[in-house]
Length: 399
Image 1 (cartoon, rainbow, N blue to C red):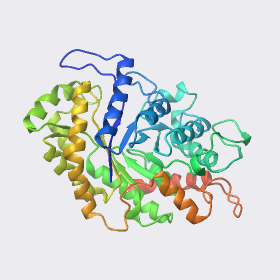
Image 2 (cartoon, one colour; image 1 turned 30 degrees about the vertical axis):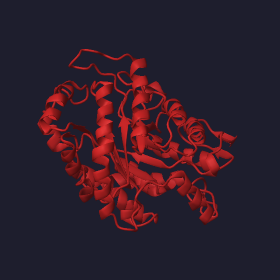
Image 3 (cartoon, helix red, strand yellow; image 1 turned 135 degrees about the vertical axis):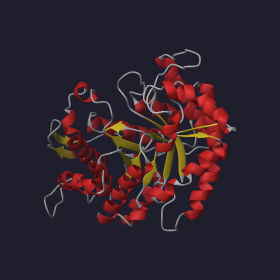
Image 4 (cartoon, rainbow, N blue to C red; image 1 turned 90 degrees about the vertical axis):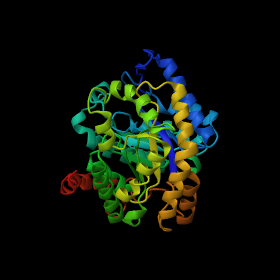
């Protein structure tokens, strides 16, 4: 099982000192955090994508490309790649370039984002968010799996005889996650293609997360990618730990109370009870997160948010050490001891995907990308039809 950290890249004043980092300081801190996570032995570092203050991670591939050259082992990923407002041609080329630079040590997570104004900033209509996600991703897959692409869709200008460069490493595209908190159509999309599904449940009760993951698993099996319990699932999480539980509560409380997202809202007591945020000793973090598989089944990736709310860099690095040295070894042992032999321990690596393609003797995604030569239908037509019914099926699950 993979354990790692993700950053939303917020620039927030430290409520205990009054210090507000500038954008350069915050970006450089994120680089230090990722490099420290690599040295500590964590499995994944992921960055979000935002185009508005107070966030600074506007160019994930630039950041991850730098980290590809300054880290050795950690998988580099995104906590969101905006499939709705980025041109899929640019995504195809940027992430294929990153894949080459990182020698396959990367993947990415598609998302629609949670900032409404970003849509008109990039010439799109937020009311078309789901349709943009469906069409743009269908084109992205074709750009990665077909050497020459002709394209005529609704949301971008047509392509004629277009080849995205560079081509994916070893002819195999990066592994893709689809992230969604509340949209069954996106879970349906992930299931349709046999991709991963990550529910970043940092603000949601576990019963909602359970419903979303269950829906994805059932549709994954429906589309013939394997049994429901073999679907590739990831979760988000939050913690703050100190050796003594009361010390953790006392130290973290001013950051929680003044955080731009949940500050001045629910109490920290209410938030830790209703969401995965856990504040306390390392053992309390272990006990809380060891129960996640009871709700969502055996899963493959657990990411934690640790660098937010104005926490100083020194404190963040201490949290990474606690995570790597005390929390992850225990959680890994607990989860792997309970995992059935037929359920994957990790998301597929680049080497795994190359081997799968070689074994199948065909290019990755051939049967779902582009036009089906027998029926004349396209993958984006099929998944759009499926997604249209996903909301109704999701309503039945209470989503």
